[in-house]
Length: 119
Image (tube, rainbow, N blue to C red; front, top):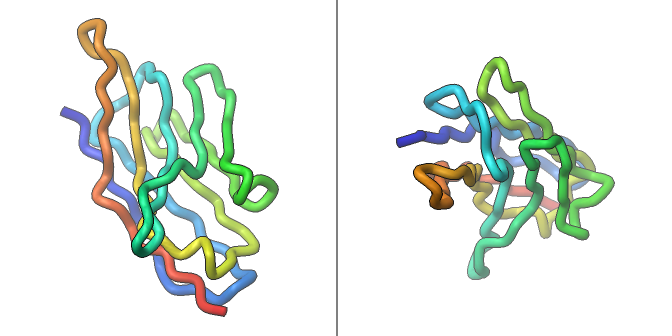
């Protein structure tokens, strides 16, 4: 059972930056995807950025050019660098890990970290 712990959220002004971190409780040697979702107030959870095991990345159109996902395999940590933040980026951000276990896909979620961007 992998545990994911996010950190780095907070309150910033529009145009500023934040870096979120997601630490896994064990060394992740292979995975289908790791990344970030967010849930804005009163809305459904949505994908922000995902990283595949082969290094490919995918971003939601709303964050392309502003957010960058990266991973430090040695530390077992995934990062989300968020630049030029906007009020519409305000949400709870969740780390996610998808990997194969015993021939089935298993998804793990962190507890979430709040990001609030004021105008």
